[in-house]
Length: 412
Image (cartoon, rainbow, N blue to C red; front, side, top):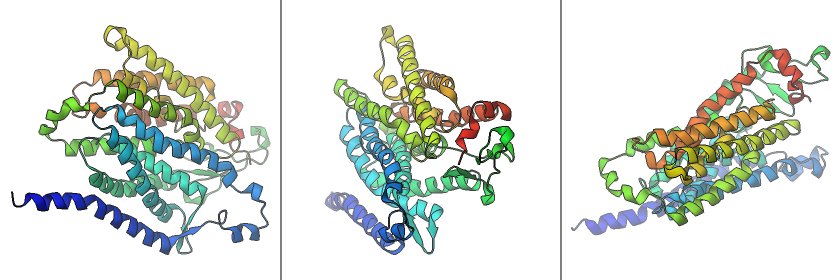
């Protein structure tokens, strides 16, 4: 008993000291390494005789606002369906996001935008940081009720680093990015201009027509949803203890918790087209990404309601299905949404995603993490086969892709 007060004092100091240490460390690193990029620094911007109206802020910031709302409101309220962990869901989401966006700015900056001894930040780095935060929050959803805020901060500290490395390998060592309509592949090689017979007019030939297939992941099906879901589920399995079953009755939902969780679902549903299109090429790239996501979400919602009533007891709808499977359409087209998926392809992908995500929990009743299965069914599962859907469309004959208007994606 003599040690009890000291242990209580240690627990009281654990979170404050960790928060202060992490904030102090990130502040020092920001002071040493982080600088505005040329689109943010007024002197550098006007030195290039640019007009303020041409600044990327005006094109990217609306998407950033939508993604930011998804992170802090959508993900925060999505997990409050657990009746005893509503405060944990909203509060810990706020804490994790505030730390992870700073830490991811540093990690991603060192990997992607470090030159002349500094990390250069702008509106795109803000969006990328929020994407990383999304993966962290997906992981935390599998750990609610099993960890405290200090443990979640340590999880974020590790996961952000692994997320950055995983993203760098997929999208830079194996993949390709589009900047200003020009496509760059492995080794920095520029794509070849489209010939007139292919309908080109100064555009760039898709690299998969002249080189081995590259990696594209506009909406983060692989880098965000799959990575975040399975990272969280692995930690959930590692932290599992048989005595946790004693508190299983606290992990169910009640009327008001499901109602608040629907707020998170609706926020995510509304803003998901912005999430997938936030960093795609300006113009037709963003336009078709938003459209494909829009139709896919609509189809996944219809299939979710249909299957939920079909498998539910006495034909009743299950709110867990509605809260999570309705979002599967946005996840599954994350990889392929900037491609010429076509409206029909988006509807088909969304319908299948909603079906799989609704049936998944019904067929997996024995999982030790079943109260957090939404992380797998809505994020991990659909993120896993989302790239396959994109590969299906990339597998079409090259001339067929051209007929569908693929060359427009690469028009400069």
